[in-house]
Length: 207
Image (cartoon, rainbow, N blue to C red; front, side, top):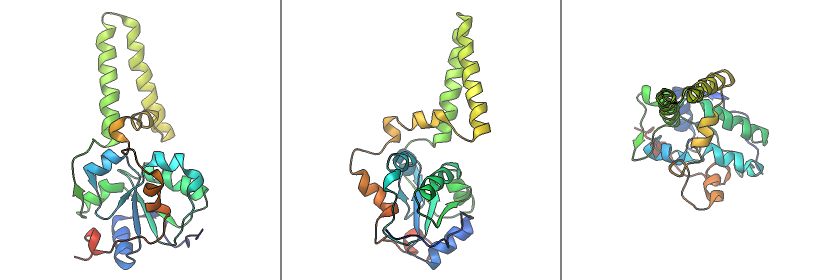
């Protein structure tokens, strides 16, 4: 096992992350969103290692390299959760992109777009809103069903207060949010394995 030197800041702005990648092409951009979200939109040269996989394989989070690592998600929340998991496993020197890929886009940094699923936050809003709407309408015929809407509302309040989201974790188990069956070890190696490939040009930073 090779420990990271704690040189990567715990949180990096878009400019800092781009400068780090430009100055040190070994830097690994690890996107912890679901595979569907990653397929829809991601930073060029980044690798997808979903947060759920990190939870499942936390015992294997031993790095074979000392490359700088920057974690990415949509807004920074899931990336911070991933950083805590990785830090607890003893892999230090891992940073989080502040504001996530949303901030990256807002700064005009390059992205690659494809066909994938909605962002998880959008999926949560759609699912929660649909359940509330259906339960309220159904409650017109059977009033006790309106308590379902109250339950969803309470869940959203708790999610905001605790900075967690049980609904997102459940939605993450759905087929379109999971990676195709394959070698999870190979996926994890984008974070932990040796010999990271890539260069500043690969992520548009050399232009």
